[in-house]
Amino acid sequence: MAELTHLDAAGRARMVDVSDKDVTVRQATAEGRIVMSAGALAAIRDGAAPKGDVLAAARIAGIMAAKKTSEIIPLCHPLQLSGCTVDFALEDDAVRASATVKIGGQTGVEMEALTAVSAALLTIYDMVKAIDKGMTIEGVRLLAKSGGRSGDWHAA
Image 1 (cartoon, rainbow, N blue to C red):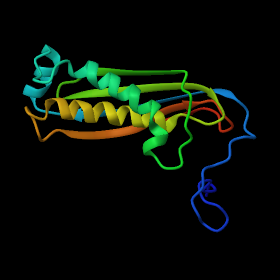
Image 2 (spheres, helix red, strand yellow; image 1 turned 90 degrees about the horizontal axis):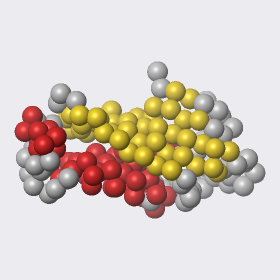
Image 3 (cartoon, one colour; image 1 turned 30 degrees about the vertical axis):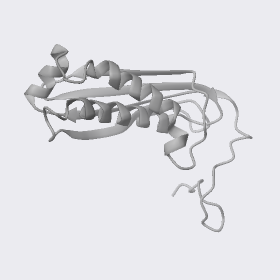
Image 4 (cartoon, rainbow, N blue to C red; image 1 turned 60 degrees about the horizontal axis):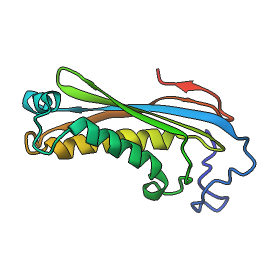
């Protein structure tokens, strides 16, 4: 089993010391989706949601959340991100969100990508909940990461 690096020898939480790690280009991509009614999806697609441009607001929310990950996830390092994109695909019954985050640094950006997707999906929920309160957020997961000591990883 892998060592739990966020715990010290006595089992107390700690922020991992990354000062001896090499600075490398690191990137992570995450995805998730929000399942909704045909009416809610049509409002997003047609730009007819009561609160305005849903995907534009969700994109900004995702990028902002990636930048603020260390403020909401305990023990995450505050990072100076070099890039973040949030994209959407309309499906038959859902909106799929994906986020890619990049940094030249000493620690990875998996949590930032996952946080960006989560915030984007929550923003979609907030903006169309007047149409469909029964929406379901699902499948938030890491798709890929690259860089750093552990190298590349891709979801199966």
